[in-house]
Image 1 (tube, helix red, strand yellow):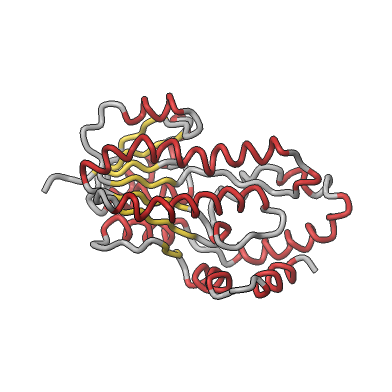
Image 2: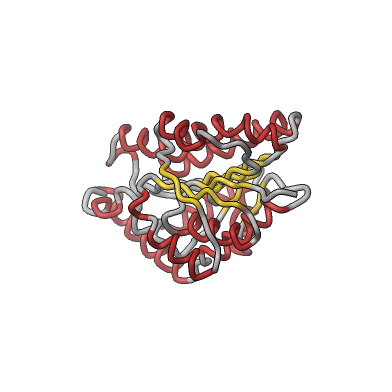
Length: 273
């Protein structure tokens, strides 16, 4: 059997970088994409250290022309990993609708752009779509309104797409990491100004930030999350929903077993009390 090909978005750091290296080590031909290929140094160094090769391509998931150019010339694609994303900290009253739109463009419409372009190739190979969402795609979290809204949207879209894609032999899965020790948190939009602009929400945001620091002190490594993604890539019958750690499984279980929503409200309300 010829080597299988996977395209992974958002591979300049964090989970995307770790997944690209882990997939290559498992024998996949990896097309590692990122918006700015000048930032490929960390990925290429990690690949070299692991003794594997990856192909780096430019891809801005928010630009359909960039997506088309990235996929141009591919004769075969066996898997797509939608990983590119961006966070945002703040609450709507203190921010803007434009901020929310920007988050949706990357985290939701970016996923749609790439998935739409890849599906004909994946249908031909009977391949699979794996989309990295978040535990924030299951449980809405204080001061993460825009981010969680986007991840909820991705989960709803993929959950709806999965049975349709399955009729043509394409499997669809979502991966839900919890806290991961990567550059993602330091790059979260609005983080630097959120507290000074919080106004009446300052006490609640201060409590939330303290809780978040504690959570990330015990965060999973990107490599740990990547292992779950590669397992999905290679599973004979991949599950639709997979969490990447025991902590993520315990957290999402609160929502998935919460018929009236009271358990989630009690849990997240305690974070900012």
